[in-house]
Amino acid sequence: MKTEISFILNGLEVDVTVDGHLRLIDVLRNMMSLTGTKEGCGKGECGACTVIVDGRAVNSCLYPANEIEGKSVTTIEGLQMPEHKLSKIQQAFVDHGGIQCGFCTPGMIMSAKALLDSNPNPSDKEIREALQGNLCRCTGYVQIVEAVKRAARQLKSKQ
Amino acid sequence: MRRFDYFRPKSLKEALELKKTIAGAKFISGGTDLIVQIKNRELKPSALISLRFIPELATIEINGGARIGALVTISDILQHPELGHNYPVLTEAAKSLGSVQIRNVATIGGNLCNCSPCADMALPLLVLEAKVRLQSAKASREVPISKFFKGPGESCLASNEILTDILLNPPHNKAKATFLKKGRVKVDLAIASLALLLEMEGGICRKARIAAGSVAPIPLRLSKVETLLEGAAVSEDLVSKAQHLARETVSPITDVRATEKYRRQIVGVYVKRGLEKILGQSLA
Ligand SMILES: Cc1cc2nc3c(=O)[nH]c(=O)nc-3n(C[C@H](O)[C@H](O)[C@H](O)COP(=O)(O)OP(=O)(O)OC[C@H]3O[C@@H](n4cnc5c(N)ncnc54)[C@H](O)[C@@H]3O)c2cc1C
Ligand code: FES
Ligand code: FES
Image (cartoon, each protein chain N blue to C red):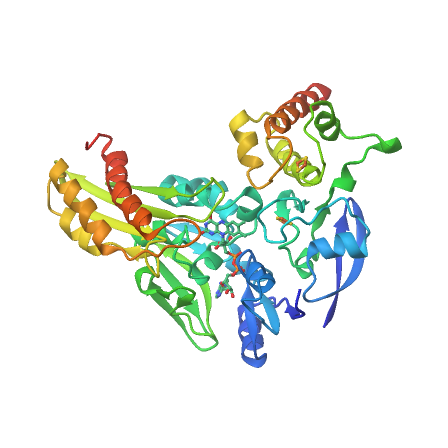
């Protein structure tokens, strides 16, 4: 059974026709060719597939595609600035060694973005809590927390 | 993933109608249990019937007590100021459930209907003596939460029923409650967990409600321990009896997370810690 769904993807309205069993990550990677979103475990454990739906970080591997009807989805590709520049959060990850192999990074950054959008001035504890659903096998997390702190400072000074 | 159809009814009536007509269909709320079970091939539904497009299921109402719609997410519970103020034990449990990404979609109704012995939201609801409302095409019934769970993955919910609401009594201003959970890491299912509600008057325990998770086939009220505490002065001697009785009452299993013996031990420790936390004193 196929259903037509419309939603907003990185600010643009899109229509897709999906099978019932497809997940949001399948739509993003296979239909929209947005392969920045990664699938690690496919079971909600690792957070590599994190995207933002209506302002909240979610695991796109557990999100039925049918449920995105009428919603707004932001992926890592949606963070790109004009002239292919990196966003402040992305740049902070690069500058602080918060990115090594990079597999966890898009998910980490989307979780960090969801946090900073709702709480521009998070404590270390709040940053660690917001990133608890994102596993990283390389960095040891310290640099990631530093990167998020730096991004928070830069985003504030911009305003 | 195995193929299935997906339906998004806009009313309870339509959802119940679909369930009746499609053989092998399952309801889906947040999907954080269900999608994983399908992925693990533990379940092979022919279709999923989403409850997420039925607006009345996703509301919270404070009415002396409270009515929490089954589709309210764990994050919604954490963001609701009055609910947290009136029932802090509910927020304590909600905070411990999964990661941000899970809490943003996982629903309270799904947590109960999945009927896992480790369901975190079951414990505060058991000590608050909540009721659940179950709706079929023909009738609606209210069941005390202590009668809802029947075994791992099994409840008194019939296949043609939807859990629509969780009903809470008005907050009890003399009673205090707390929630404790032991996991391997912060984001994990409980190795063992405990909720405890206590009402004290002049050093005497007037009311005790205790529920434990991951130590029996269902989230379990420890009625014998409650009876031991009620009407008695909470002394060190009584606490050590209560711990012993709690360890005897539960029937945990050994699995990947912990051994049966360890789980029993933790329940005893948590009975004491819970009492200490509520009474604000050490019961060495
Ligand atoms: C990474 C990860 C971490 C987790 N951590 C925890 C944790 O710490 N503590 C914990 O308790 N759980 C945890 N869970 C399990 C799960 O997230 C929760 O149990 C969640 O609350 C389930 O809700 P849901 O809305 O996603 O349910 P769903 O998956 O949508 O449904 C679960 C079951 O209930 C049925 N159902 C759902 N809603 C209704 C309804 N209203 N009426 C009738 N039947 C219904 C469905 O058919 C299904 O069988 C975790 C899961 C993952 C993937
Ligand atoms: S791929 Fe979604 S949480 Fe791991
Ligand atoms: S950078 Fe390699 S997993 Fe995080």
